[in-house]
Image 1 (cartoon, one colour):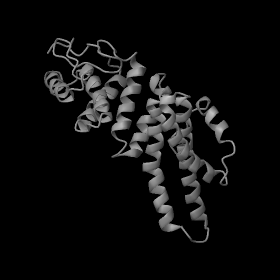
Image 2 (cartoon, rainbow, N blue to C red):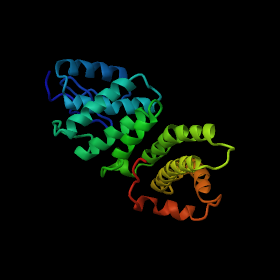
Image 3 (cartoon, helix red, strand yellow):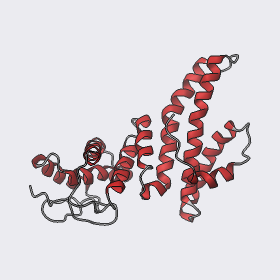
Image 4 (cartoon, rainbow, N blue to C red):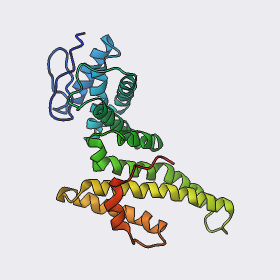
Length: 249
């Protein structure tokens, strides 16, 4: 198979998959054809990085369009591409991404999105990693919204259920206090992630509904952590992006 395949560029952030010529399957949302073509390419060249990158990110594009049938394949390709790039391998060209860091950011973002429902704890790792690179992903509201959701449906849900089971409506003990403090740390991560999502969204009217929803979620956790007060919340949001992204607890 000709290794120049897969270098076609369609619209921004929409890779093309090809067999010698540019075939914008993904740009046309023809994901079945894209993955079929990609499978043929990789059958001949199993380590062909360009195809792995394109198919890895295509899974995010498909899933975000409510088509999740390629999730497992996309995760395999995206992870393989990340591993290869981190090991020093490069494609013939990075386009449609801006370079190595931009590609890694988008691939980790894709992995985070694709594992959000099935493995939110690991999605946190991928989303945190995606946000570390200097790319558009670092400034994209959904990066931090998905991070908040991953914390909520992962460690927060687990720790909250355990606390309710073992300590709810019982006298405080050193163990219950420690459990509550641990839960509080995760709530702080949720608050921080929502604040970053809101701050990243800015004042664009198109994001108003999402910002309102995020603010409502954030406020619940924020008030719990601040004696039922929302004092300082506006300032917290305003300064969110100026602070380092906190690590996973």
